[in-house]
Image: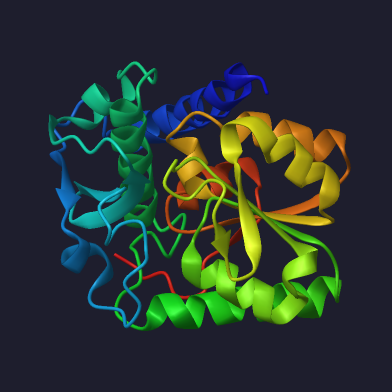
Length: 257
């Protein structure tokens, strides 16, 4: 997969959002942007199930605040940041830390400008409701088909298996603790090695917006499009990028900031 494609997507959004910020006279005003890694309880509350990556410590939600509006992004490399909007737009998008700060800030700014909604993560039992709705939406739109899930969200994985059957669901993940294990009757493949295999074997691909942060989003999208497959991106992380780039995002229970 070509990682340059992913950077191209973020750079494309940066050009557009910088232009918007200039027209709104936000670049020359010291806009405070504070991004902090949230605790699991702050980010997701207390859901009944305890196997979400954020709860077991593999990921964190970074929260950016722009003019009182909030935006979230998932990352395995949370980093605090305090500066101006211009500082964020000038960041080198070459690390997970910087990409998380940029994407969370983009989400917060676009929420403030009323350009996008659902930029804050759902809480408590809402992730389970979200998973049910995602599976139901895909089933109604595409019928019984082969589904690929890129990024193991356990609630979504379980509901997809319930709806389509384990023989019709493929899952990849980058967490070495998951790779090779069975989850809900499906073996978890290595996302670094077998995401192309997942795309080839699936009719509809559902993939996490966290791929924007770990530098795999564009390569996955390029492969999906070259194969002519249908796809959806799930979660709050991809809110702003999805809106600016015309990418279909599914996030039934995301909250407004």
